[in-house]
Image 1 (cartoon, rainbow over the protein chains, first blue to last red):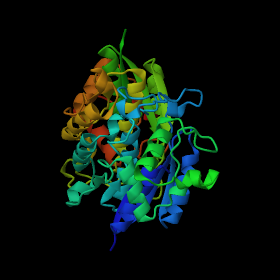
Image 2 (cartoon, rainbow over the protein chains, first blue to last red):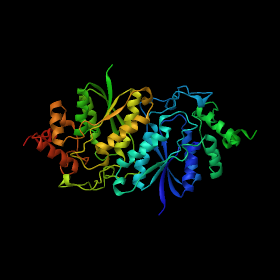
Image 3 (cartoon, rainbow over the protein chains, first blue to last red):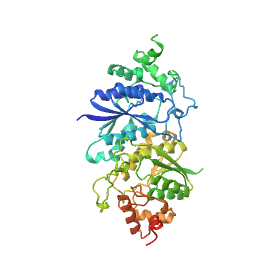
Length: 228
Length: 228
């Protein structure tokens, strides 16, 4: 019997790479995508296409944050634009309170029901926006919570969160994605939900800097504008 | 400025008591109720009425468990009926995978946005059905996760889960509820979503045994059938 994993898929570059990595490690992958009122809702369509390309099941779950509290949930809010993103001191306004905790909780429920032994998340603590729930110690703590939280534990089995990209730079992730054959042209990173990436938000900046450092051309931009 | 708390309110006896206890401790209470496809959906109406009686805000959040995995989510499933509920060895079929972890995650998000310092949950490890996410060590672990999970931590503040009923027997909770003036006639415990409590499911059994031990009459039954 194959080993199963729930993959938190956002439609972005990191989660797509995580999916292809889990597949390569022999996991039967069950993608879980959240429609949570994000302004860049087009990432959901990206996620669906990526899952289809990987020939995996894809479940889109609708949840809501009626209390808002994030620029990602509010179309009128100004998105952060940091020239020196690596020197960022504050947690940016795109932080969604407890978002990863909520995502992982649902993934845990799903994993327990289908008998999956792993939950993959493409969190990254190097080229990231400073979110508290992207740090390695947060995932260690969550794994320690899981050991007490579910019925699975009583059966002697374990469900574990795996963060394969946590210590990789964006350039390293892009190189890995390239090697794994991730359809990078289908991924979507921009926080703005426009037809083309804005090129200015933190997420666009991290992506373009990553491609530059990896010495690769972003196929998403290549597709749209042609190779320069 | 008043101290704020998010109260996980289910419409049952324990969460109603927790709400009135938090109020008594001086918290401004924000009730959070989940519509998660439970077969005993009428508990939501109970929760609304209880919150109204306590003069507190009440937010009902719709979520779903498309993967099911619990008799509480499936109207056709047989509900457990344990004559000796205290000697129960196995986790019953009414266990909903990771339910409390999901509820607490949303409560954490809500608490962070409104600036609440506490999340109250009426979990109980004495007269309970054996769920893994009702034990004290689970809440200790969750509190330790919270310390790494949110932006709030970086501001030097803390959000803490409080479980005031965790070590009380059902009879003790009922006596406390009585003392606090909890509208017990509005609470709903039965797992079956019928017009009157079935009197046979684990939840009904725990409730009726609790009232008997507390030497009190259940006002919900008194109202329906008249005092015997």
